[in-house]
Amino acid sequence: MADLDAEPDDDMSIGEVSRQTGLGVHTLRYYEREGLMLSQNVMRGTGGHRRYSRQDVFWLRMCIKLRASGMPLAQIRRYVELVREGPGNEQPRLELLRAQQTRVEHQLAELQECLRVINRKIGIYEQHVAVGTASDLWTLTN
Image 1 (cartoon, rainbow, N blue to C red):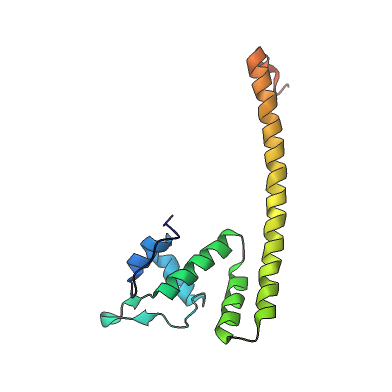
Image 2 (tube, rainbow, N blue to C red):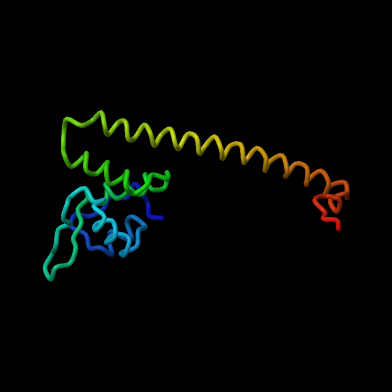
C-alpha cells in the first residue's frame, strides 16, 4: 500500500495516482463512474487523459479508509453527495459517519472475541505439544 503521508504532486496522471493510493487504474475509473470522486468530473489533460489534483488524492485516501472499514459504496456515494452539496448538511454527514463508527466498533469487538478464542487454542496446543500429548487434540474417530 502506498505511503499515506506522502505529498502527491499537483496534476497527476492516473498511473501516478494509482501508485500514490495503491488503487488500480481500473478501480480509479470505477470510482469515477460510480460518483465516488469529490469533483463530479476528473480533469482532463491534453489528449483527454485523466489528471488528478492533491485534493483528489486526499479524497481517494478517505474513500480507501471508508471502504476498508466496510462502508458500502452506496453509503460512500451518499457521503460524497452530501460533501458536494456544501455547508448546511453537516448533521447528516455526522450521522452517516457515526453509523459507520458503530459498525466498526462492533466488528472490532467481534474480532477481539475471535482473537481471545484463538489465543486460548494456541495456549492449549502449546501446552500439549510441550508435554507430548498433542496427538490427542481434535482427532476424528469413526
